[in-house]
Image (cartoon, rainbow, N blue to C red; front, side, top):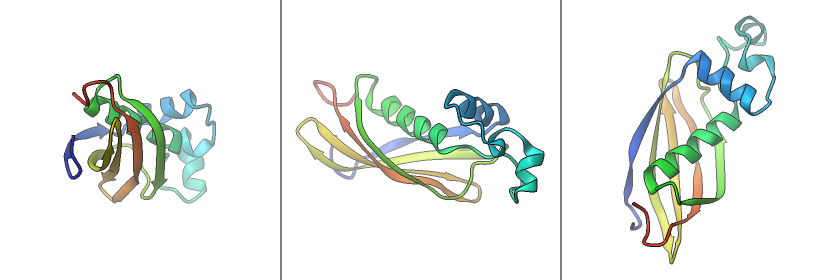
Length: 131
């Protein structure tokens, strides 16, 4: 693993089930994450994914790419364009820094209307490096 290396993209279909299940799993019962009519009344065209689901998907992306023994040390993300049902989010990453067994990866998750998530993930790599 070297600075500038690109991680392979991961496409995630954004479904109603994914949005609602992620909200329930993270105990985020805000109506905008499960009730389309109430979301519309609040100005959104539909329900949308919460940040905790996005955070989990970013973590999954990193461990899928770098291996299950990779330890997430810091996840610093910022949300942008909402993830609505029927869209696809594509996660991409690039290595920003590597020092001994620690690496920092820049992550971007884009959907049909823009960048849903941007940020960095700092990890401790397993012995022998990433797979």
